[in-house]
Amino acid sequence: MTTLRVIVDRIVTPSPGGIGRYAEELTRELIRTAPAGCDVVGIVSSSPEPDYLKLEQLLPGMTSLYKSALARRELQLSWQFGLSRLPGNGMLHSPSVFAPLYKHDRLNNQSEQTVVTIHDVIPWTHPETLSTGRAPWIRAMAKRAQRYADAVVVPTHTVAAQLGELLNFGDRIRVIGGAVSSKLTVPVDPDARAARMDLPERYILSVGTLEPRKGIGAIIRSLAEPELSGVTLLIAGPPGWGDLDVEALAAEAGVDQSRVRSLGFLADADLAVALDRASVFVFPSLAEGFGLPVIEAFHFGTPVVHSDDPAVVEVAAGAGITVKRDDAPGYPRRLALAVAAVLGDPQLAERLRYEGLDRSKNFSWRDSAEKVWQLHADL
Image (cartoon, rainbow, N blue to C red; front, side, top):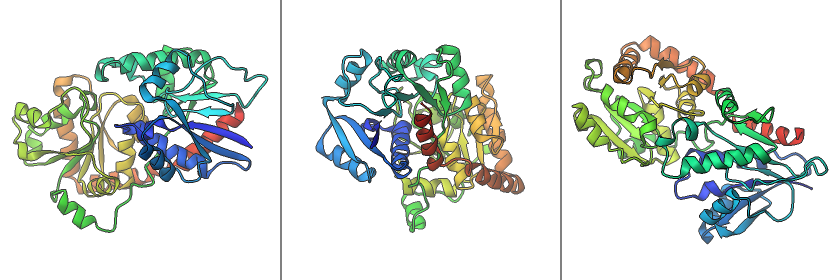
């Protein structure tokens, strides 16, 4: 029996975020697509018992769950300095750089291989947009990956090129993207959920953690432009760092606070309803490695306006309207014009709807999982 050990710790962190969703969806599909004679074992830091039960429920078919004796922070420090190893051997896959990276002999033992994932280069290019200590830790782990990882997975060719300019991974970089969650489907009670969220008949929607890098300030300021007079903006996403206050940003921009509302973190069913009913989806992020919310909006046929961040442009592939980020003072105005163009032109909105639906079909978790299995087989 060949074992693939997957680090599933991020799924049960207090704020799993996009990487947590990535880890959950990828691991679930790795289990489903496991070749004959292969099994999947999860690895998690010392956690409360409910977290172990949650992992077993979310990942049916997982052969077993290795529970470290070290809590998350202690395990993170231990792995950063190469002080702790996992028992046994076998292929190791991490959906982040949170992994035990040390010298191993893959030449004489092909099953002894380690693959990690680097989702973006923000810790190098925009470290100020991350919480305290996170950027240095990711950079330190990436350097360990440069020395000891057998391969590094990135979500886009953009990140592959950017990362290659920062660290020499040679030919070890592999591009394997993400996809829309299998849970993100319109539920049987959409009207009731829309009423509970108080969704207006017409609104623009943005999705992302409330932090400066996501460009939330720019889209809020765009509401002050005459072209968007009376338009309501809804923002779905958990609180982030940086004390980003939606109401304060609206007041500063001179926008009536009734036109801007934070929905907070939404369950999958609620998010599906919000995405499905939005008139326009706006993704103004200043820096990304993939931009999954764009694919999610495409999946529901919602017209998309997005920034010209290279990774987002790569993922959207022309199925949305691209807005330049340079000249920051003029960014809100350009966003407003793009959104207004969609709102005012039903034919344009319809064209974007079908182009988005078509583009979303290029991404699936099954495809991603099969590529991961092939990567380990190639190693």
